[in-house]
Image (tube, rainbow, N blue to C red; front, side, top):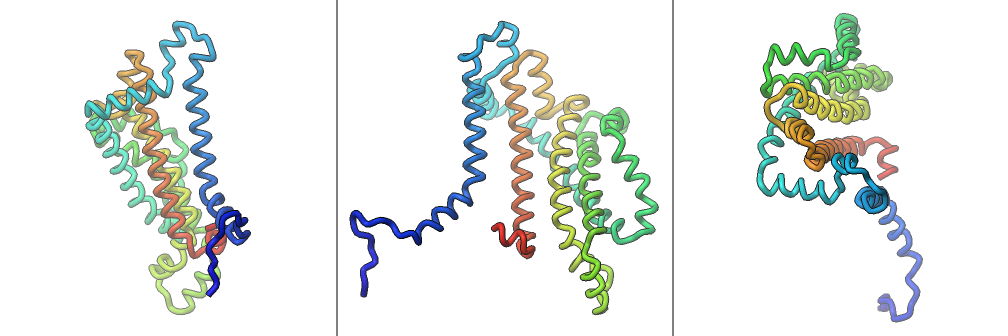
Length: 282
Protein backbone atom coordinates (compact mmCIF):
# COMPACT_ATOMS: atom_id res chain seq x y z
CA UNK A 1 0.00 0.00 0.00
CA UNK A 2 1.33 3.42 -0.93
CA UNK A 3 1.44 6.09 1.77
CA UNK A 4 -0.19 9.18 0.29
CA UNK A 5 0.39 11.44 3.30
CA UNK A 6 2.20 14.66 2.48
CA UNK A 7 5.81 14.82 3.65
CA UNK A 8 7.42 17.97 5.07
CA UNK A 9 8.53 20.27 2.28
CA UNK A 10 6.30 18.68 -0.32
CA UNK A 11 4.42 21.04 -2.67
CA UNK A 12 0.65 20.54 -2.43
CA UNK A 13 -0.85 18.75 -5.37
CA UNK A 14 -2.62 20.82 -7.99
CA UNK A 15 -5.60 18.55 -7.47
CA UNK A 16 -6.39 20.60 -4.36
CA UNK A 17 -6.64 23.81 -6.38
CA UNK A 18 -10.18 23.30 -7.68
CA UNK A 19 -11.38 22.80 -4.11
CA UNK A 20 -9.86 26.11 -3.01
CA UNK A 21 -11.17 27.88 -6.10
CA UNK A 22 -14.61 26.41 -5.58
CA UNK A 23 -14.62 27.49 -1.93
CA UNK A 24 -13.65 31.01 -2.94
CA UNK A 25 -16.36 31.18 -5.60
CA UNK A 26 -18.98 30.05 -3.11
CA UNK A 27 -17.92 32.54 -0.44
CA UNK A 28 -16.93 35.42 -2.73
CA UNK A 29 -20.32 37.22 -2.70
CA UNK A 30 -20.56 37.04 1.08
CA UNK A 31 -16.96 38.20 1.58
CA UNK A 32 -17.30 41.08 -0.86
CA UNK A 33 -20.62 42.18 0.63
CA UNK A 34 -19.34 41.95 4.22
CA UNK A 35 -16.13 43.73 3.33
CA UNK A 36 -17.97 46.58 1.63
CA UNK A 37 -20.31 47.03 4.61
CA UNK A 38 -17.34 47.04 7.00
CA UNK A 39 -15.53 49.65 4.88
CA UNK A 40 -18.57 51.92 4.76
CA UNK A 41 -19.07 51.65 8.54
CA UNK A 42 -15.39 52.42 9.15
CA UNK A 43 -15.47 55.52 6.95
CA UNK A 44 -18.72 56.60 8.59
CA UNK A 45 -17.17 56.22 12.05
CA UNK A 46 -14.13 58.26 11.03
CA UNK A 47 -16.09 61.18 9.56
CA UNK A 48 -16.08 63.28 12.79
CA UNK A 49 -12.30 62.73 13.08
CA UNK A 50 -11.54 63.56 9.45
CA UNK A 51 -14.00 66.41 8.86
CA UNK A 52 -14.72 69.37 11.10
CA UNK A 53 -18.45 69.38 11.72
CA UNK A 54 -20.39 72.44 12.79
CA UNK A 55 -22.46 72.40 15.97
CA UNK A 56 -25.69 72.12 13.98
CA UNK A 57 -24.35 69.23 11.90
CA UNK A 58 -23.15 67.37 15.00
CA UNK A 59 -26.68 67.63 16.42
CA UNK A 60 -28.07 65.66 13.46
CA UNK A 61 -25.15 63.26 13.03
CA UNK A 62 -24.62 59.87 14.67
CA UNK A 63 -21.74 57.45 14.24
CA UNK A 64 -22.18 53.66 13.96
CA UNK A 65 -20.82 53.22 17.48
CA UNK A 66 -23.46 55.60 18.87
CA UNK A 67 -26.16 53.79 16.91
CA UNK A 68 -24.92 50.44 18.22
CA UNK A 69 -25.11 51.77 21.80
CA UNK A 70 -28.67 52.98 21.18
CA UNK A 71 -29.63 49.57 19.76
CA UNK A 72 -28.06 47.78 22.74
CA UNK A 73 -29.94 50.00 25.21
CA UNK A 74 -33.25 49.45 23.41
CA UNK A 75 -32.88 45.67 23.46
CA UNK A 76 -31.29 45.48 26.91
CA UNK A 77 -33.99 47.55 28.61
CA UNK A 78 -36.71 45.77 26.65
CA UNK A 79 -38.25 49.00 25.40
CA UNK A 80 -38.09 47.81 21.80
CA UNK A 81 -39.89 44.48 22.12
CA UNK A 82 -43.48 45.69 22.22
CA UNK A 83 -43.12 48.24 19.36
CA UNK A 84 -41.18 45.67 17.32
CA UNK A 85 -43.89 43.08 17.91
CA UNK A 86 -46.60 45.52 16.80
CA UNK A 87 -44.70 46.40 13.60
CA UNK A 88 -43.85 42.76 12.86
CA UNK A 89 -47.46 41.70 13.38
CA UNK A 90 -48.78 44.32 10.98
CA UNK A 91 -46.11 43.43 8.45
CA UNK A 92 -46.62 39.67 8.71
CA UNK A 93 -50.44 39.65 8.63
CA UNK A 94 -50.62 42.08 5.72
CA UNK A 95 -47.98 40.23 3.69
CA UNK A 96 -49.54 36.81 4.27
CA UNK A 97 -52.97 38.11 3.24
CA UNK A 98 -51.42 39.63 0.09
CA UNK A 99 -49.84 36.28 -0.79
CA UNK A 100 -53.02 34.32 -0.09
CA UNK A 101 -55.08 36.66 -2.30
CA UNK A 102 -52.51 37.64 -4.92
CA UNK A 103 -51.19 34.22 -5.97
CA UNK A 104 -54.53 32.49 -6.74
CA UNK A 105 -55.97 35.63 -8.29
CA UNK A 106 -52.91 36.06 -10.51
CA UNK A 107 -53.17 32.45 -11.71
CA UNK A 108 -56.92 32.83 -12.29
CA UNK A 109 -56.59 36.05 -14.29
CA UNK A 110 -53.71 34.62 -16.29
CA UNK A 111 -55.69 31.52 -17.27
CA UNK A 112 -59.08 33.18 -17.89
CA UNK A 113 -59.46 35.90 -20.51
CA UNK A 114 -62.95 36.67 -19.27
CA UNK A 115 -61.84 37.26 -15.68
CA UNK A 116 -58.86 39.26 -16.90
CA UNK A 117 -61.10 41.53 -19.00
CA UNK A 118 -63.40 42.09 -16.03
CA UNK A 119 -60.78 42.90 -13.39
CA UNK A 120 -57.87 44.39 -15.36
CA UNK A 121 -59.24 47.99 -15.33
CA UNK A 122 -59.59 47.92 -11.54
CA UNK A 123 -56.13 46.39 -11.03
CA UNK A 124 -54.50 48.90 -13.37
CA UNK A 125 -56.25 51.85 -11.73
CA UNK A 126 -55.49 50.83 -8.14
CA UNK A 127 -51.90 49.92 -8.96
CA UNK A 128 -51.29 53.28 -10.65
CA UNK A 129 -52.78 55.21 -7.73
CA UNK A 130 -50.28 56.27 -5.00
CA UNK A 131 -50.85 54.33 -1.79
CA UNK A 132 -50.83 57.51 0.31
CA UNK A 133 -54.12 58.53 -1.29
CA UNK A 134 -55.84 55.65 0.52
CA UNK A 135 -54.34 56.52 3.92
CA UNK A 136 -56.97 59.07 5.12
CA UNK A 137 -59.84 56.77 4.16
CA UNK A 138 -58.23 53.73 5.78
CA UNK A 139 -57.60 55.65 9.00
CA UNK A 140 -61.23 56.76 9.05
CA UNK A 141 -62.53 53.25 8.36
CA UNK A 142 -60.15 51.19 10.51
CA UNK A 143 -58.88 53.70 13.08
CA UNK A 144 -55.35 54.08 14.41
CA UNK A 145 -54.95 50.49 15.54
CA UNK A 146 -53.52 47.35 13.99
CA UNK A 147 -56.01 46.81 11.18
CA UNK A 148 -55.38 50.07 9.36
CA UNK A 149 -51.71 49.10 9.29
CA UNK A 150 -52.53 45.61 8.03
CA UNK A 151 -54.71 46.98 5.22
CA UNK A 152 -52.01 49.46 4.12
CA UNK A 153 -49.41 46.67 4.04
CA UNK A 154 -51.86 44.41 2.20
CA UNK A 155 -52.56 47.01 -0.51
CA UNK A 156 -48.87 47.73 -0.97
CA UNK A 157 -47.81 44.08 -1.23
CA UNK A 158 -50.77 42.74 -3.21
CA UNK A 159 -50.12 44.25 -6.62
CA UNK A 160 -46.47 43.16 -7.09
CA UNK A 161 -47.46 39.58 -6.31
CA UNK A 162 -50.64 39.70 -8.40
CA UNK A 163 -49.10 41.33 -11.48
CA UNK A 164 -45.93 39.22 -11.48
CA UNK A 165 -47.92 36.02 -11.04
CA UNK A 166 -50.21 37.06 -13.90
CA UNK A 167 -47.24 37.73 -16.20
CA UNK A 168 -45.66 34.41 -15.26
CA UNK A 169 -48.85 32.53 -16.05
CA UNK A 170 -49.25 34.32 -19.39
CA UNK A 171 -45.66 33.42 -20.32
CA UNK A 172 -45.94 29.73 -19.41
CA UNK A 173 -44.77 27.20 -21.98
CA UNK A 174 -47.75 26.69 -24.30
CA UNK A 175 -46.27 23.47 -25.70
CA UNK A 176 -46.11 21.86 -22.27
CA UNK A 177 -49.66 22.98 -21.54
CA UNK A 178 -50.90 21.38 -24.77
CA UNK A 179 -49.01 18.16 -24.04
CA UNK A 180 -50.48 17.87 -20.55
CA UNK A 181 -53.94 18.71 -21.87
CA UNK A 182 -53.61 16.02 -24.57
CA UNK A 183 -53.25 13.43 -21.80
CA UNK A 184 -56.62 14.46 -20.38
CA UNK A 185 -55.41 16.83 -17.63
CA UNK A 186 -57.97 19.15 -16.10
CA UNK A 187 -57.43 22.88 -15.62
CA UNK A 188 -56.38 22.30 -12.00
CA UNK A 189 -53.77 19.75 -13.10
CA UNK A 190 -52.44 22.11 -15.78
CA UNK A 191 -52.06 24.91 -13.24
CA UNK A 192 -50.43 22.62 -10.66
CA UNK A 193 -48.07 20.72 -12.98
CA UNK A 194 -47.12 23.31 -15.60
CA UNK A 195 -48.33 26.86 -14.99
CA UNK A 196 -47.21 27.44 -11.40
CA UNK A 197 -43.76 25.78 -11.75
CA UNK A 198 -43.09 27.76 -14.95
CA UNK A 199 -44.22 30.96 -13.26
CA UNK A 200 -42.01 30.51 -10.20
CA UNK A 201 -39.30 33.05 -11.22
CA UNK A 202 -42.00 35.68 -11.74
CA UNK A 203 -43.67 34.79 -8.45
CA UNK A 204 -40.39 35.03 -6.55
CA UNK A 205 -39.64 38.41 -8.15
CA UNK A 206 -43.10 39.56 -7.07
CA UNK A 207 -42.47 38.38 -3.52
CA UNK A 208 -39.20 40.28 -3.33
CA UNK A 209 -40.90 43.46 -4.51
CA UNK A 210 -43.81 42.83 -2.14
CA UNK A 211 -41.50 42.63 0.87
CA UNK A 212 -40.14 46.10 0.16
CA UNK A 213 -43.66 47.47 -0.37
CA UNK A 214 -44.84 45.81 2.85
CA UNK A 215 -42.06 47.38 4.91
CA UNK A 216 -42.84 50.72 3.31
CA UNK A 217 -46.49 50.26 4.22
CA UNK A 218 -45.60 49.65 7.87
CA UNK A 219 -43.40 52.73 7.97
CA UNK A 220 -46.00 54.97 6.32
CA UNK A 221 -48.79 53.69 8.56
CA UNK A 222 -46.77 54.22 11.73
CA UNK A 223 -45.41 57.60 10.67
CA UNK A 224 -48.80 59.12 9.88
CA UNK A 225 -51.47 57.18 11.71
CA UNK A 226 -50.57 54.73 14.45
CA UNK A 227 -50.41 54.67 18.21
CA UNK A 228 -47.66 52.06 18.63
CA UNK A 229 -44.86 50.54 16.62
CA UNK A 230 -41.25 51.00 15.65
CA UNK A 231 -42.12 53.85 13.29
CA UNK A 232 -43.80 55.71 16.15
CA UNK A 233 -40.58 55.46 18.18
CA UNK A 234 -38.63 56.87 15.22
CA UNK A 235 -41.02 59.83 14.86
CA UNK A 236 -40.84 60.63 18.58
CA UNK A 237 -37.05 60.32 18.54
CA UNK A 238 -36.78 62.64 15.54
CA UNK A 239 -38.90 65.26 17.29
CA UNK A 240 -36.43 65.23 20.22
CA UNK A 241 -33.31 65.12 17.97
CA UNK A 242 -32.32 61.57 19.00
CA UNK A 243 -30.66 60.76 15.69
CA UNK A 244 -29.06 57.56 16.99
CA UNK A 245 -32.50 56.14 17.89
CA UNK A 246 -33.87 57.09 14.46
CA UNK A 247 -30.97 55.26 12.79
CA UNK A 248 -31.49 52.31 15.12
CA UNK A 249 -35.09 51.98 13.97
CA UNK A 250 -33.99 52.29 10.35
CA UNK A 251 -31.46 49.47 10.83
CA UNK A 252 -34.11 47.22 12.37
CA UNK A 253 -36.44 47.81 9.40
CA UNK A 254 -33.57 47.16 6.98
CA UNK A 255 -32.63 43.97 8.82
CA UNK A 256 -36.23 42.76 8.63
CA UNK A 257 -36.26 43.39 4.87
CA UNK A 258 -32.92 41.62 4.36
CA UNK A 259 -34.02 38.61 6.41
CA UNK A 260 -37.27 38.22 4.50
CA UNK A 261 -35.51 38.69 1.15
CA UNK A 262 -32.95 36.05 2.15
CA UNK A 263 -35.75 33.59 2.92
CA UNK A 264 -37.29 34.27 -0.50
CA UNK A 265 -33.91 33.68 -2.17
CA UNK A 266 -33.57 30.36 -0.34
CA UNK A 267 -37.07 29.44 -1.51
CA UNK A 268 -36.15 30.42 -5.08
CA UNK A 269 -33.01 28.26 -5.04
CA UNK A 270 -34.87 25.31 -3.58
CA UNK A 271 -37.83 25.45 -5.96
CA UNK A 272 -35.71 26.28 -9.01
CA UNK A 273 -33.26 23.37 -8.85
CA UNK A 274 -35.01 21.62 -11.70
CA UNK A 275 -34.13 24.50 -14.04
CA UNK A 276 -30.90 23.79 -15.99
CA UNK A 277 -29.52 27.30 -15.72
CA UNK A 278 -29.90 27.34 -11.92
CA UNK A 279 -28.42 23.88 -11.62
CA UNK A 280 -25.31 24.97 -13.51
CA UNK A 281 -24.87 28.02 -11.29
CA UNK A 282 -25.13 25.97 -8.10
